Structures are given as structure tokens and as C-alpha cells.
Image (cartoon, rainbow, N blue to C red):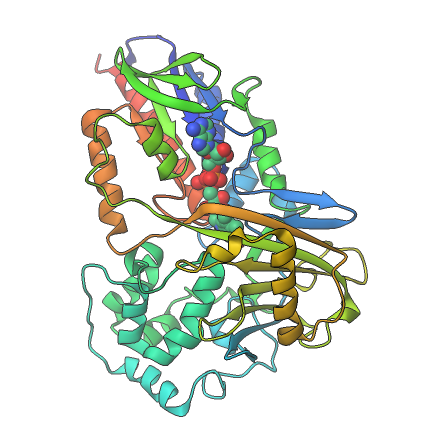
Length: 478
Ligand SMILES: Cc1cc2nc3c(=O)[nH]c(=O)nc-3n(C[C@H](O)[C@H](O)[C@H](O)COP(=O)(O)OP(=O)(O)OC[C@H]3O[C@@H](n4cnc5c(N)ncnc54)[C@H](O)[C@@H]3O)c2cc1C
């Protein structure tokens, strides 16, 4: 094979969230290593990079406005950290008790149902009071039930079928609502939990499959000392900062919003908010789907496609003195069932979960507000939100007094909801693009996984795909 052209190509990436940053990093790394004639430019509408990742560091506190940790099941973030030479800055969470609030009361989550690794005092599945005897017997029925796979089904439907309604209402719904703000009656099992979905196919019984695999269980060396969740020293922004620093000088442009994308000369032309026009041979859109759709209003390209909807949520961080918490002082977190009167959907005791996140003697609590279909609470003023959260905390953990500070962060339509049929919708989006605009590609949290590791994996895969496409076009058999 020989290279037939040395023509300089330009790849533009829109969106410097974790997906766009990872894509740019891996593309530039390969371009540098293989001396490829390719320019990679990264644009973001905001004056800061990181998108939903945003860490505040103030007065000895590390406060995450958006995501606060990640579960790196396949080592995607670890590999990126290694490539950035910041692997030593990765931290695992401390272990401690996790609870679920059902009908206003906190119950410990059985040991095998939380990846936080609870202490020995935690009940087992058989002794938990989160389930009645009939609820436990119904869950055990999973062992003898036949397979019942459908093309795709909601998360609630899948688990109700296998382990019954009580497990869904008292475990699955609170854990998912407190993590993804999702409505389990709508979310797609196949898109959200492909590995658990596959368990039924392979092992028939979900419980037997879980026991045989390590999907929810940790390797022994980690299990006894630490949990499975990770962050970086000084917060998730450490990863963002390192990615930004590693980019080729002047290849990142902040404060530049892409207004419109048009086809031109085999590539595309981007219209920017400052009036400038920018040509790209290949374009990667790493923004939420709604923003991509707005930029690409090329007659009806996505009209037939089920929209990728997103939930609106808020995170609330509050600082207290430790002695203001009078119950469940050693908890790592609690989740809230929809059958509870609390407005918050989950609460993390960040000072227990992480080392060096708050000054000595101080407690840092982080709460989620807002569920799909119940999002109006997010629109309230900061002081109204603070009042509601304090009421919940008084009842749930016996909190006394006022916070030293409260930080409310609103995330409007920010948590993508992979509803039933999501995978087909993504396939249609990509098929439409490859037919109509083969030089335009979409990636990120709207498509193949919401979590930070999912976004990193997508970014790395996209970088490889586009460079393969460009370099193969440049070579021919001699
Ligand atoms: C409150 C909250 C808590 C979360 N908690 C966790 C967690 O604990 N663990 C976890 O793994 N995941 C969590 N997630 C999910 C995870 O943080 C996100 O899915 C992920 O960070 C999204 O990254 P992204 O690069 O796909 O998109 P984004 O971070 O949304 O980045 C997109 C970028 O595109 C830019 N942009 C948009 N439109 C334009 C335009 N027209 N022109 C130029 N630029 C544009 C934006 O400014 C933004 O910087 C959480 C998400 C939220 C909102």
C-alpha cells in the first residue's frame, strides 16, 4: 500500500465535554505518532471545557456540580488516565452503608445489592426488611422461571417478570431514579443494561447468572478495602484539565457556538456565532442530540426518528459540621423510593465516601432532585429548594441546624433517557447521516451510554474510526 496524497485534511469536533475531549486527545495522539497530514480542531460554545463535568474547589471542599464518580467496569477511564500519565491520581471510594428510604424510613441495602460494599452489619437478601416474605419468595422464583426475552422491554417490565414487583419498587426504582433520574416504566432494558439483559439469555435465571458472573461483584483484592466507584484527586475536573492540557496548542476554541452546518465541496461548512465560517472534511458532533439536531436542520433528516429525550435534574451540595447529622452518621448514601414522601431522590455523604473532600470535622452532603414527570421542583428558587431539602434531611438523618453553605446546580434536559426502542433510534440516526452526510458523525451520552466510562469509550472508538476512514482513503494498492 502506498499513500497517494499528502493533502492536509481537517477534522472538526463540536463539543468539549468528556466525549469530545477524549476524541480529540486520541486523534491528535495518533496523528502525532504517525505523522498524519490531519488537523484536529475542537470547538465548544462554553468558555470552559468538561460539559457536564464541573468541579468547584473552595475553602478545602471538592464539590461536584454534575457527575461525582464513575464505575469503570471495562477500564476505559483507567486506560485514558494511563495515556494522560495521571493514573496515580485515580481514587476508589471508601466503603460504608447504603440505604433505601421506603415510606419515609431508611433501610440498609443487602450486602449483595450495592456496589459500595457495605459493612458486615448489613442484612443479607434473606434478612432484609426491604422485602416482605412473599416478596422474597417471588424473587426466588426467578431461579425456576423460563426465559422470556422480548426484542426490547422496559426496565420495570424485565425485572417484574424475573423477580417481581416488590424488588422493582423497593430496590430497582430507587437505585435507578437516584442515579439516572429515569422512569423505569419507560427506560429500555437493552440500551441501559445490556449485560444484565444478556444474563437471562445465557443463564436463564437472573439470580443464577449474577452469581456466576462478576457483573455486580468486585475482584477480591478491591472488595475488602474499597468500593468500585472512582474519581480523581481534587475531583473529576482533574481529568478534564489533563485532557485540555494535552491538546495541540490552539486546536481548542472555547466560546464558539456552531449555529448551522451545511454541505459544501465534499465536506461541510460550519456557521459560527461570531459570523465565521469553518470548513471540515470530517465532522464529529459530540453534543447532546437536541443540539446536533438544531445544527443539522437539513430538510427533515431526523424527522422520522424518535427523539432522544433528557430529564431535568438538580444537584444540591450542602456543608455542615459532622455533629449536625444525628442518625446514620456512617452512611455512604441513601436512595429514595417513589413510594416515599421525600422530594430528594438520593443523598451521598461525600465526606464519608471520599478522602480529602472536606475539611476535618465537616460533612458534605450531595443530593439529587427531580424525576422524569416530576421536574417542576428544579424550577424553584435556591432558597425554596434549600428549605425542601433541609426538611427531608431532618426527617431522614436527624439533621439539626442550618448549612454553612448550599450550592444548587440545575441541569436542564441533561440526563438522556434511553427509552424502549433507543438502539433502533440511534441506528436510524446513523443510517440517515451515512446516506445524506457521510462526513458527519455523532457520538456521546445521547447514543451509546450515559456514564463517563461509556463516553470515554465512545470518544476513543470514534477517533479510531475517523482516522481509519481518512487514512484508508489516502492509500491504494501499489
Ligand atoms: C447532574 C448529573 C450527574 C451525573 N452523574 C454521573 C455520575 O455520577 N457518573 C457518571 O458516570 N455519569 C454521570 N452523569 C452523566 C455524565 O456526566 C454525562 O453523560 C457526560 O459527562 C456527558 O458527556 P458528553 O461529552 O457526552 O456531553 P456534554 O458533557 O453534555 O458535553 C457537550 C458539550 O457540547 C457543547 N455544545 C453544545 N452545543 C454546542 C454548539 N452548538 N456549539 C458548540 N458546542 C456546543 C456544550 O457546551 C458541552 O460542553 C451525570 C450527569 C449529570 C447531568
